[in-house]
Length: 174
Image (tube, rainbow, N blue to C red; front, side, top):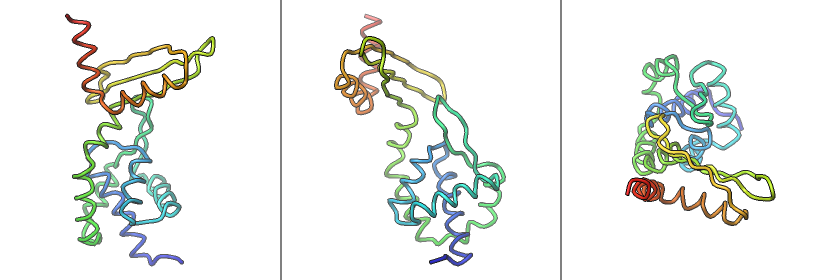
C-alpha cells in the first residue's frame, strides 16, 4: 500500500533528522539499523527513500578510511530546518532516546576497523585499525595460520579496542 505524501515527507525528514542528530558521518547499515529497529519504515522503502535523498543532494556518501559513510548536506540541513515540525514529536523522542542509548556503539563502529583476507601460503592477513577524529591512531597487520585465529583476533579487537591499544603502547614504551 502506498503512503500518503505527508507520510513520505515525514519519513524522509526523519532520515535527515537522524543524520543531523548523530553529528557524524555514519554507514548505510547504521542508518538502516536505527530506522528499522524503531519500526519507522520497512527496509525496501527505506532504501528507496535514501536513494531519492541522495539524488536530491540532501545526503551524500563520503569515503572515510575505506568506509563509505553518509552525511547530511547543507541542502538537506536547510530542508530539515524548514520542515522539521512535520516530524511527529513521538518519532523525534524515540529517535533521540535510541541515539542517546546507542551513540557509543555507533562511534566505536566508525572508529574501529577489523577484517582479514586470505594471504599467501594459506595464511590470513588480519588488518586492525583505530581511528580518532578521522586520524589514524594505529594500524596493525598480522599474518596468522588459520581463519579461526583471524576471526578471533578481529572479534577481540572489536570488543575491547582501547585496552588492547593501551597494552600494545605500554609494551612498546616500557
